[in-house]
Image (cartoon, rainbow, N blue to C red):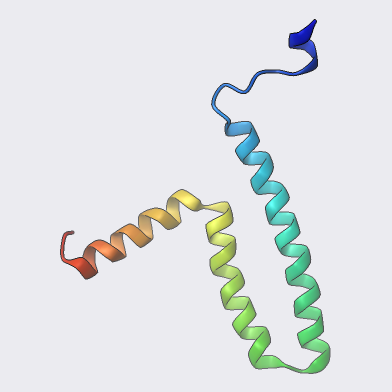
Length: 82
């Protein structure tokens, strides 16, 4: 009966996906509120800056492995090890 109530997590991939979905939705809700505030106050520079930062944060949230590969590649080029 216990196995019907809660399925065991074998790798944690399901939990990771669920957390990323919730985090992404919260991120977009906050982004929409801030963007609306900047738009209404006509703070165009801050709105663009927030948009650029939002793209980076969204990439980290939804594509963490890809961001890790890109940043590792950049570091290897800078350090001369790659």
